[in-house]
Length: 210
Length: 210
Image 1: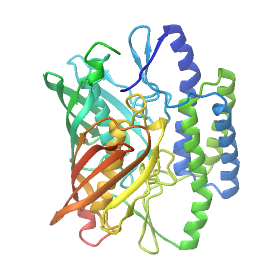
Image 2: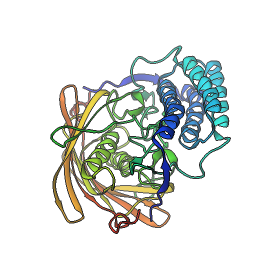
Image 3: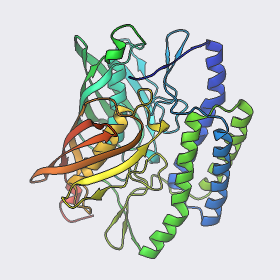
Image 4: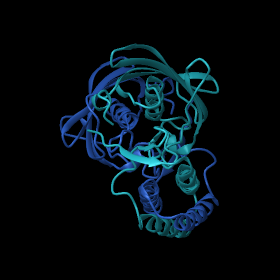
């Protein structure tokens, strides 16, 4: 059902690709923030727009037909560079970098600026859900075989300030193909959103086929 | 707690601002898609990046100190142009345009491309949550006073294909400051994600102060 691109990309080649495309996405993230916040006049906007359209035309000269997909490295590692939360090539992604601490908890520290706004000065509740959905899913997975969200619930304790944020998630139990996970998002003053979800190993990942 | 910028902006001025800034955000959305999907070489990426950085510098010459916020028009209408889901000035927003049909259901039709990917070729589960959280919140609100998410749950029926999508939401009941709403996301083959939530009128919006 879901097609993964299988590529035996070497570690050297991955680093070469990262060096080319990661700084590009970082530049576009800066541009997104500047676009939301700018107050320059119509002439300055027109000049900026012309440069942006020119850059887009350059990048479109050769491009993948659909979406980026997930590419597998020769190590078996997933390269989800287009992902909306963790994709280093996706300017929409903060991007969140998830690590496992010594207790097996999946944790991340990240910054959300003006582009992630809902209530004035605060993180959109749905953006909190976006990041937590990904983090709980990652906690529920083993790093190779993804588990996808079956059901997930969020409780909003209070509004989350835009700025430096922290989130963490952990598995509570596994029953067959179902893995249960809980987690939360926090700003400088403490927990703002709590999450719990059930994550399911997709059928196409159960029979050993990739 | 949440600061709204109060501005008595006239309808003419709104149209002038829209004509300047909406096409800019549309150009940046195209650039985001091109950035995720490009396969051009390092030299072409460097040339594009230089143009992007130049555009960013132009836009940064005058900008709002924090996030865009929500500005009120002289009509009382909210102008949430920086919003992560509906903001016409926010390149991260698809943007979703919500309308009410004859039965009072809040509906939207929108396109999600490569930048919203989770599983290969499919919408990130958290992006589905992001859009539905906003749509149910909008359904639960009266168009002037926002209601914020208290709790919300999502059930993923199956993966949602990237492409043209439809979502709708409706209030099921209201009890005091709590409004209950349900909704769903659908792709061309039918419903993919179901949502239900409780939305709460924030304290600062209950006493008539804005």
